[in-house]
Every structure is written in C-alpha cells, then in structure tokens.
Image (cartoon, rainbow, N blue to C red; front, side):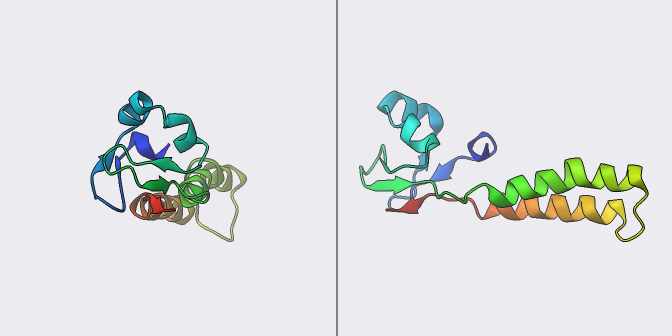
Amino acid sequence: MISLVKTLRCPYCDVPVSKELLKTQGSLKAYLNRKEFPCPHCTKAIKLPENAESLVSIGLFTAVILAPLLHVWRFEGLNPLYAFGIGCALIVLGMSKQKLIKS
C-alpha cells in the first residue's frame, strides 16, 4: 500500500527502489512478503519491516470506519471529528515513518 504513495529509498545507497524495478529484477515477491531482497543498485540485503504499515492501517480504520460509526451512533464520549482527525494524523505519521531497513 505504501509504495503506491511514495517510493522507498535504499538505506545503503539512498537511491529509490520502485516496484517496477523490483519486478524486472525478480525481487517483487520477496518485497511483498516482507523478506530480504537485494537492492537493485548496490545489491546489499534490505527488507520492508513487518510492522511497516500498521500505523497507516490503524489510521484508516479510525478515519474511515470508526469516525462515521461514532457519528451514526451519536456517541457522547468522543466527537467524531476528533476521531477523524486522529485517524488522519495516524495516516500521515505512518507514511512519514515508512522506510526500508538494513538486514
């Protein structure tokens, strides 16, 4: 999901690693399965961490599902606009912390 928004960079050579480049190299399956794969530029081992998209997923759940449900149920404890704002903030935070790691 994250690679649709921004291209991740190799932690060794700081060159963008795109899905198209990984597909031509044959490492796309390892990338999607969160396993080690060689960087197409410097050939050192890198991987996408297991918890890479957890903040984005939690933010999407909060903004897209929880906030409208709070509005429909007229929940008094938390304003649905605050829940939506918290969800959007989690999405932005998760997107900014997204990166490939050395392995």
